[in-house]
Length: 410
Image 1 (cartoon, rainbow, N blue to C red):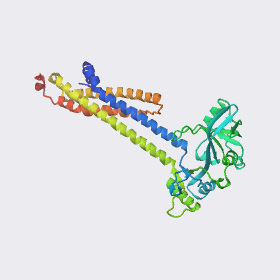
Image 2 (cartoon, one colour):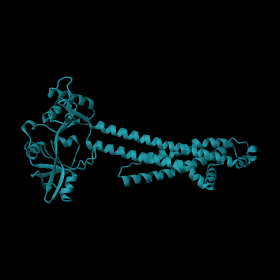
Image 3 (cartoon, rainbow, N blue to C red):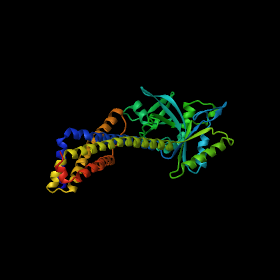
Image 4 (tube, helix red, strand yellow):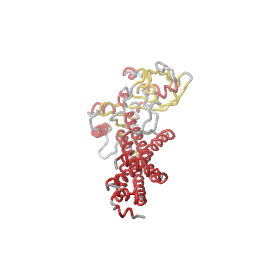
């Protein structure tokens, strides 16, 4: 029997018991659909983390004041005013792994432009901030170092602020008011999206650090140089751990901390945090895929069971085929093709259902999903392999029948 004849015979056998065939394929359909959906959702999660890493900037470390002890109580990161603008300058100057630093101060404020107003975050920083965060402009320009040194009333705004205050109008050279201080918009940042904590990074007004201190926020002279955080960018290819160690050693010296005394600052490697998040997402995807794989195995066992029943029901047919010249390998190929057809058809339906389920998840849950052709090929190949693996034993059993005994079977 040639291959085409074997396929036709397989189709006839499947159509003869259509409901039984559909029920047999159900395990494969559910397993493949689950694999496709899990891989798509997992791929979307990994793509989301990759976007967050790109949005964060490459090789970024965050320094925050805090972890100090007050009255025997250890305070968390962000507590106290232990980091200064001079610390940031010293790190950039004395730690060889560091490419640039950006000290920052941040506060919430109501921003007004003409008849519109919007609550947002106001960030005071240096011109290096945009390079450290790898944040390009959409239009206009950044504030100049001279403007930063003389507390110029200029601001660069994010996309969300531009949309809420100016709509479709061009914000460049327009006036906004922050705490009643007029600022001229000189640039609009490119869209950045949400960060790893779900916050809208485009909802921000960036001003020079001196402008933030001298015009927007009245602070005592003792805290004049303190900052809320310092974002540090490490040179490409250099060790993040070496940069962390260098910064920690330098800051302990500058803050005159004794051996054994706790750091009065916190170092966070944000790239490592996001990488860990990506790794955990990948592990969860593989775990769910393994659960879906169990469904495939159960489906394969169902195929084996039905094929064994089919061999028993068609024993006389097998005997007749052998009596008119069919060889054992023809019988083996016929039943093997029937098993592969069952699992392959179930896999195709499962792929379609999985793609539909992925689209439904993206539409109703708002999750990002990524369904690559590799997942489709893998699912199709795995379902076919299940058919071969679980169909071989029934096919081998049919091929081993003796023609006389098969013809005598009742």
